[in-house]
Image 1: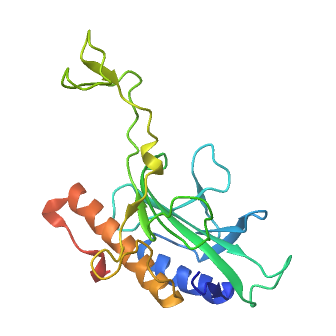
Image 2: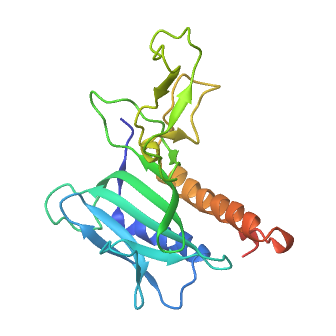
Length: 220
C-alpha cells in the first residue's frame, strides 16, 4: 500500500486554494466534518453554504463563469487516534469530486481511493463514475435465436440490472508501461490531479453550453 500519510491542515489549505480558483464565492471556503464515524470532511462556503436538496451537509459550490454547474468535494481521513489534532499525520483514504448540473442533477464524479480493499475487485485509481441516466424497468434486447440462453419463442432476453453509477472508469491507469490500474499516490500527484480534473470537466461543460464564447478555465 502506498504511503498515504498526510497532515490535514496542509491538505485542506491546498484543497481550498484549488477550489477557490474555480468556484463562485463571496466568502472564504472552509472545511466541515460531516461524518465523524467515517472521517469525512466536505468543503463549503463559510457564510452562505449551498446544500443539495434533501441531503443535509451535502454542500455544493457553484462554479464561476459557468451556467448552472456545481461541485461537491469531500475527503476521507483516518486519524492516528480519536480526536487527533489536524496538525498530525492522518491516513488519507480518498477524495470524491462530484459534478452537478443545477443543485439536483448529478452527472459524474471523480474519485481517488487509496484504502486497501481485501477480497474485493481492485478498482482503477483514480477513476470516473458516469451513467446517471434513469434506467428503464423493462429494457430488452434482441439476440440471435442460436444463442443458448435466449427464449426460443421470442428471441429476446431481459437485460440484467446494472447500477451504472457504480462502475469505475480508469482515468490514469498505467496500462502501457505497467500491468496495473492503480496510480502511485503522493500528495503532489493528488493536488495536480484535483486541479486538472476539475478544470477539464469545467471546460468540457462550458464548451457544450456555450461553444460560441467558450473561454478555458486556465485563463481565470
